[in-house]
Image 1 (cartoon, rainbow, N blue to C red):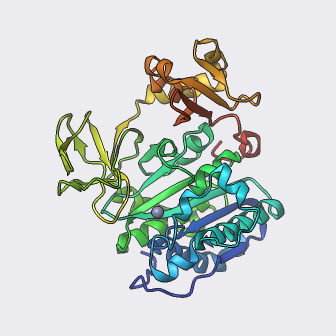
Image 2 (tube, protein in one colour):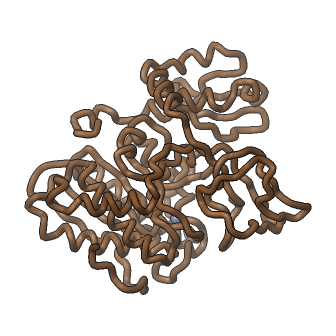
Length: 396
Ligand SMILES: [Zn+2]
């Protein structure tokens, strides 16, 4: 396999880890590593990948840019110093980013710099653009992709020999990738494994190599595609399935929460199975499925998620109904109206939402967020997609 550095030590980090301009025209790939500072694996893999690709510049189509996320936190080996950088990319927060405030958290400065760098890339480089966000998890896991559910993202990511978890954006507020997705680009996350595991580093590296091929930057032969493909597909035991998050167990700050030992990411669970202990009693699975990201280390308010396989038929139908924009008929239903004249978001009365299963909105390309006591806001992922910019690619 590729020469992997022996340990994850703490070097000096720079915003631009490296960039390589190919001799031939092509897309622009932007990789971000370490947006969580306790996840250096992505950054190190990017350093290695840049070194590996550099001599192959003449065969490279387009440009590869590798960025570091939370530099200050990376330096200290912390997830973040003041606030989670990967929860700051909401529209409201992005607006207030434009004015500098006197007392700012460390992360706001990081965010401004990172965002300016990305903006500049979007202005000066040529598309199509691809964004990849490299992460690791606190517990052991097989590698997987986290993908905002747009047809564009689905189509691109299904090339990878990896499990794909759709719909995490419904549960997370303000990750960088959701923001980039809303700008209409292909953007998604890759979770390589446990934070300090050697395997994560190898998985990250293989992921970068496959991405070069899938975007059309490199031909498979010139980078030894096969071995990286094999390495990743072996790591996931050929689990190339689309999953959807169907449940999130929220843990409030006041509560003590302890997962029962032994649950592995993607492990099957049965309805009513005891999963954890929490102030007030035991926590049982409200439905059958697979456990996803159980909270074993550190703090957080996501106790665990439950995911389930999305039937192929559902994927097909949803592709079809989204393409014909069937969702425009939703406003004919009582309690459903457009939030603005842009017709990107629906306001749905919560009583109505109870009758219309969430699945229906998912099918039509909507993801829901709480809006107020009486309404959900449902956002359409397809409207902003820059499909035209990707149409001439090999994978489209
Ligand atoms: Zn992370």
